[in-house]
Length: 567
Ligand code: HC0
Ligand code: SF4
Image (cartoon, rainbow, N blue to C red; front, side, top):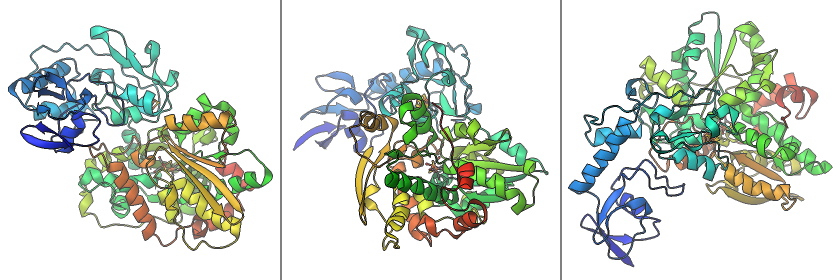
């Protein structure tokens, strides 16, 4: 065993990658902007400086812990250095904290507060730079950038996109797409990972709150909501609940109090998606069609495939995502069901994701020029709207979702975690391929958090070789082999966000490193509490087939539930 000393405490060195991890592991929250455990070490913000006997002052993020080191994290000099770094950042920062959407969850604000900074002595050097609001998903505000580079490394190292980088030199350095372009002009897929890791308000989800309020206030409109799976296990975090606590009932109550007319569940459409997608899969498998079949519900992944793997678009499932299946079915059936004129029906999605905002604007997903989903707001935006109303979320009595599209099986709920789509497909495929009910609908093997997980399912006579991928850089690793004909997968699930939708960029800002695991745990717990677990058993999905769609893969189903991708 090896030991070192931190602030007079003897500490064992285990497998920590750097001194910062070790310091944080013993409960000292040393501040940083540019350190992120899943990214390479950059060492630029210098806030994590420590004093080591014999070495002097070094950044702890880039120092390997060694036997016998004597480390101090808090000295007069270190404290002064941190304050100076913070003041320099503040001097170059837009100071519109009151009106910033990150106010309350901004790390710069938090640290200025923690270090008791009450003046910025260097004068305000900063000259306003234009915002990039060019796309439906995220806003880039260079005035709030602290040059930590987290976004640049996340986009490059985790997503393998490289849409943004440092540009300019010295005092003119900033982060932007190449040649000062806007995000809509480069290969950005709107996954929002850059916004998730941004410690300030420099990259944030683009809000649609005002538009949704004005529809709610319009007495002629009937406004319906669909709630994505991952929202129910995260929105509570904005109201004092633990990550992963399932708050669906309170969520419904709050949304109704806000003035929505009906509250439905995207998980209903997820059940529907499984039937269509599994049908497509089994058909391809039995007719020698194009395999592997690759899932299509993550819009950032679909855009990535269009840009980087156009030759594999024939492998991508033609199924629309649950969000868009919901939109299409709701447009077709709800006007009559609710007795509302089609033009007065407003469909709002509540999603954990920024790319869903983009997906809803795609022209494939509109009918007679009107988008099937009118507005997409993120979990964060919904939380803010609830806060605006003053409703005390934790005091609400849970309410039920509205029928028919509020009914789902557990399969439609686990979609929000990586591996969830694959497990849901197995729950239906198992029955389709053997003609028998499954005795156990859990497939624990596909659950987990690794970026690439393989699973071979043996169902009756058929072996299905599956791989579950999260993070687009991981997708690239798997797809390179598919492209070269070197892989024999039957089915590939791809979600752009590491962890799946539970970790989407629209989820509440969280400092909890385990939030994503806890949220996924909440979805699996919710699955257990549902009466039904297999999507084919959803009586309202069955009714939708008998009344509107015929059977999975039918002409009507294709019209409403499938699409084609651009090359
Ligand atoms: Fe997801 Fe979805 S599971 S993408 O992660 O498939 O955003 O939560 O709503 O559409 O259902 C996001 C989450 C969804 C869709 C569903 C899928
Ligand atoms: Fe990169 Fe995703 Fe951010 Fe676009 S949204 S810049 S692809 S991390």
